[in-house]
Amino acid sequence: MKTLSLTARISLLFAVAASLVLLTTGYFLTQVVDTHFEEGDRHELNGKLELIQNLFKHATSQNDQDLLPQQLDDALVGHHGLAVAVMDAAGDIWFATSGADFPQTLLRDCQAQPAGCTTGTLQQWMQSGTSYRGIAVSMIAGNGKPYTVAVALDIQHHVRFMNTFRSVLALAIALAALATAGLGWIATRWGLSPLRRVTHMVAGISAERLAERLPATGLPTELKPLATAFNAMLARLDDSFRRLSEFSSDIAHELRTPISNLMTQTQVALSSARSTNEYKEVLYSGLEEYERMAQMVGDMLYLAQADNRLLRPGVEKVNLANEIQDLFDYFEAWAEERGVSLAQTGSAAVSGDRLMLRRALSNLISNAIRHTPAGQIVRVSLAGQGDQATVSVENPGPAIPAEHLPRLFDRFYRVDPSRQRKGDGAGLGLAIVKSIVDAHGGSITVASDDQKTCFQITLPASAK
Image (cartoon, rainbow, N blue to C red; front, side, top):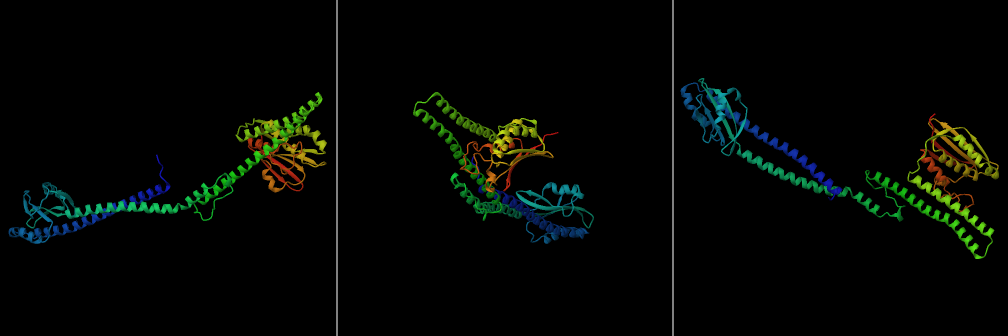
C-alpha cells in the first residue's frame, strides 16, 4: 500500500477540518433560518387567531352569529395560503375557507382535549403533498357556545426555499473543502520547502564528504533541532570513519614491521648454509616476533569483544590495595632497572572481575614506569568516596599536549607517532584499560601538566 506524502496528509487534514467547521456552521445556519420562518409563521397565525377570537367574542346574539361567516371572509381577504376552519360542539365544520384541508384528527383531538390546545403551540403536517403549519385552539363564543378553531399557513414555499438553501449550502461546503485542500497543498508545499532543501543537501553527503554540515541559519525553528542533531551525527560518523581509517593504517604498520623482520631473517638464513646454533638463533628471533604479533592479535580480539559487549566481568570483592602491591612486586625489578620508585597510599575495595581489573591496573602502572624519568616516583593512590572508589596512577614527566588527551584511549594511538621503541607495545594498552573500566560501569580520565600525568579510574565501591 502506497503511503501518502506529508503534503497530501496535511492537505487532507485541512480539507477534513474545514469540512467539519463548515458543516457545523451550515447546520446551525440552517436551524437559524428554519427557526426564523417558524417564528414568522407563529406571529402571523397568532395575529389571525386573535382576530377570529375577537369576532366570536362579540357575537352575543343569533344575528351576530349569522354574520360571522361573512365577517371571517372579509377579514381573510388578501391572505393567500391562509386556511381557517371552525368546528362546533357537535363536531361539524361550522366554517371553513376554500382550500382548507386540515387533518381530520387535528380538530377532533383539540375538541376532545381542549387543555392541550393553547395559543402559540404550532403543529406541522403534510396534506395532499402540501406542507402546512398551523394552530388549533378551543374557545367560547360571546353566546357561550364552545368552538374549535384551526388556522394554518401553506409553507410549501418555505420548504422549497429550505431545500434549495441546503443544496446550495452543501455545494458551497464541498467547493470550500476542495479550495481549502488546494490552498492547504500550496501552503504545505511552501512551508515544507526548507525540509526539501535539507533533504537535497543530505542526499549530497557521502563518505567522502562527511566534513560538510547542514546550515542551521535560515531554517525554521522546528527544523533547527533536526539540523543540529544531524550535524552531530555527521561529526560522530566523520570521527568514526577517521578512526577506522587510522586504525587500518596503524594495524598495517604494526604488522608490517614484524613480518618484514621475519622475511629478512628467513632470507638471510637461506642465503647460505648455517650451523645448527645459527638456525636456532634465527628461530628464537622469529619466535619473539611471533609472540609480539600474537599479543597484538590477542589484544585486538579482546577489544573486539568489548566493542560487541561480550565482556562479562565476574562479581567478587576485590581489594585494590592487595592487587596493586602484588603488581609492585611484579614490576619491582624492571622499575629498579629504570631507576624508578613505586609508592602506594590509601585503600579501597570494589566488586568486579579480579583478573580484568588486575590487567587494567597493570597496564597503567607499566605505562607510568615507562614514561617516568630515572630517580622519580610512580604514585598510586586509592580512596573510597561514598558508593565510589577511585584509583589514581600518577607519574612525573613531560606534559602531554592537551589536543592529545582525548585520544589517548584510541587504539594504536601514540602522542609521538614516529616513536617505535622496542618494548613500547602496539598502542592498545590504554584502549584495553578503558574497555575494562567501561565493562565494570566505571569511568577513566586523564590530566597532564608540566609536573605530572595522572590517570584516575572511578568504579562502583564494594558493599561492606
